[in-house]
Image (tube, rainbow, N blue to C red; front, side, top):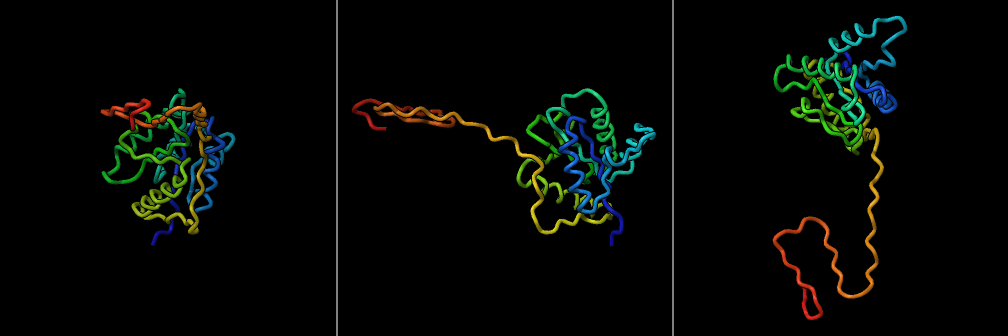
Length: 193
């Protein structure tokens, strides 16, 4: 029987701190030992050393991706490379590195071989919990205790506004949506579609 909490390292761009703070709170309340710089780094500590230590001790690394993080230059890119190097040392079939999209964004090329999770989707956190619990089983750690309720989505992008079609002014009007190929439509006074 497992007696240790699953150790999760959160890697993110500083511009995503508010969203990642929600992820931290959720995972922490589910029983995980979450390395989140806002909680783990203390004044006076060597932050570079502590980040490396947190990565080394992690059972799983959650790379929180957004438009900001994938385009930003800086330490988040270094963390991503360190996480990828560590993942290469894992046996095949092990979950260790989880790309987690906070919003619609392109995945960096070097992460495209890893299945990602969309945390803004309705089932995103549930899928993440399943992966984390599989990893907990792999490292003999306690599974996260979700109380039977669906995990909350972290953020939903604002719905895209669709342009409304203008009202027909008369005559035969056919609106076609989607891809149409290899078809002929003939419209006229005496033709039927």
